[in-house]
Image (cartoon, rainbow, N blue to C red):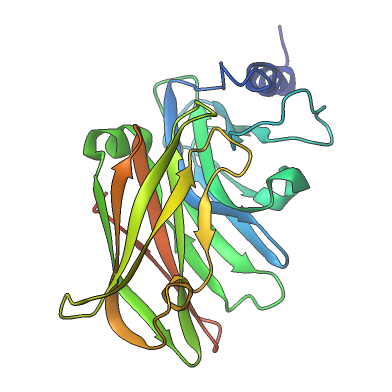
Length: 261
């Protein structure tokens, strides 16, 4: 009988073998989407996965946008997991993703069976653990059903000691696909203050996402309290998703979605 470890490794090798072909990127039947997970500098993402069933749960955590022909190891874009019945595991994204994939990204938690783990994703600054926040984890089917044309992010801030960062990505596996989006900064009373158009890649390309540090300042607004970042899809097909992460000098980080899950 094939060992438990061999079964888990066979899942990983199958996913990686598919992933090297950009026209057939791995998509397992069940997927949870982690919005903005990854690592950069002293920042990392911890994934805690709980098995809600009384049987072993096997699957993978991966990011798409694989580098064609890059060997794994060391250039890995996924890891297999195995959770014992009713058990829990913890994974640090930096421990399995190659440096090719540094930066906030879309991560997928996937299984071959009908069950998915219950997932918690936390982004944390290892050098300053007080700087941490829970990231959105949403079922892929929920995002596909919603397919919002507009994302509205509340709580947008820019002032001394605080600024908001915008993360956007498209869900899909076609490397050539991308969105054009209109990003607007609105006051708390809804008055437009600034806007600009950006290109947003989907998760099937290496860059995987659009990420703008201090998006409000980038659009030329010097001060904003309790405003809104509004993102409108101008062109492109597929599901647009994202988050707004606000950082404070005292270490706090807050994360908001642009649509209700």
